[in-house]
Image (tube, rainbow, N blue to C red; front, side, top):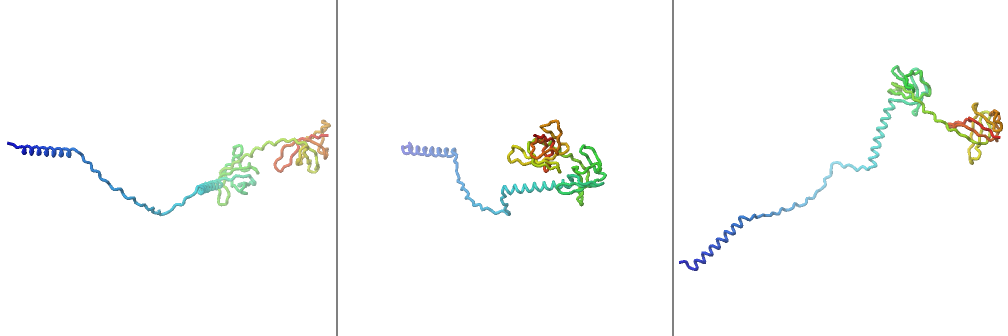
Length: 250
């Protein structure tokens, strides 16, 4: 016969077993995650190591100067190469086999051979004898040690067109008459601080007398103090004006 104490003992054993099994079940099904802390690396002091060579900082202006000097050197070299292959100038002397040119460098000589081709301004081929003094030419060839260019080709250049001279009409009073040089000094009328002009009279100057349009006055008929209209073309630098027409007032 089972006593009450035995029954209590059995219940206690069953509760203990149930609790043990429950704990085992929970431990077997639960994932335990372990977090490990990794220590942070200590900062390392970096010491700059000097390089083998230091490149100086070049300013923008210095860079520009270097580029400019390099370009100038190349341009000078190109010009020097061109000058060794071509002469340009005005013919000042011609012989059977040479031409002398005048240009900004002074005098330069050109040797003409049987292989030299000479082209006139009209694009036709000519001989050395057809060249003339004051012709402007371009000579292409090779410069020797004697500084003479052995020409392969000589081209005659057309002179620039002469600009049309400006036609001027002036009204003035004759101050002086120079019969030796056929000139009159004319002072403009009604122009303050005007400078007197020297007008040359030549055989082509046409005279008209207002009081007698049918008459044919001459240079000898001019008088100091007379008022005249003079028509002339604007002269070149350093040259005197030449009257085309003189209209004499009473």
